[in-house]
Length: 208
Image (tube, rainbow, N blue to C red; front, side, top):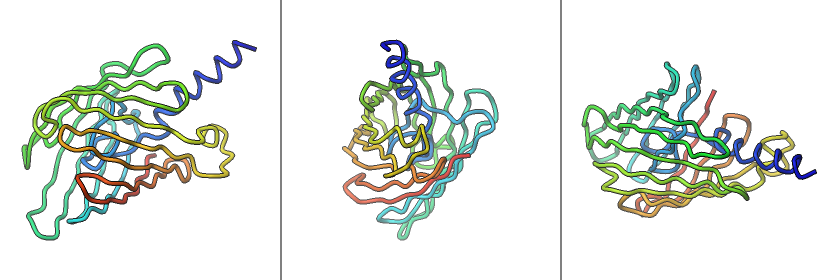
């Protein structure tokens, strides 16, 4: 019985990471503003759109080589020049029950606004929690961190959805505290809403 319970716990811990992975507002797979150590699997792609107070951002990410995620985020503003970010992230170590995931990346490679390099570690914890800690230059301005709490993960694993599995997110992006929620409506489709940089946001993404 102990082995069975341990196996179920391990499965839930590992399942919580990829199931809830989605693009961040800045493009790379992650939380709200922060990237996580997650990268898309080879052959996968993700599309996303976030509506922000002063405009919106469209996102496309894909994985063309093992452990390497590349993507673009197109910011369209109401009262200022538009910006396009090219991002890349490489997974150095995949997350397991025993060790955290580790990735390095660069956002805004062309330095359209502010090129930012970073390293980040992510680790799923018991009871639906997951921690992310990283450091970078540029917009990160040093250390950044975030925590997630997944509610009702069984529905995602079994497909028995009574209420959409939801992840609550809190993060510090190097300058601000941000808060949000991410709901898994159907496999691959996520809805996001929350508070970032002192303003509200909503978003939708699809990973295939």
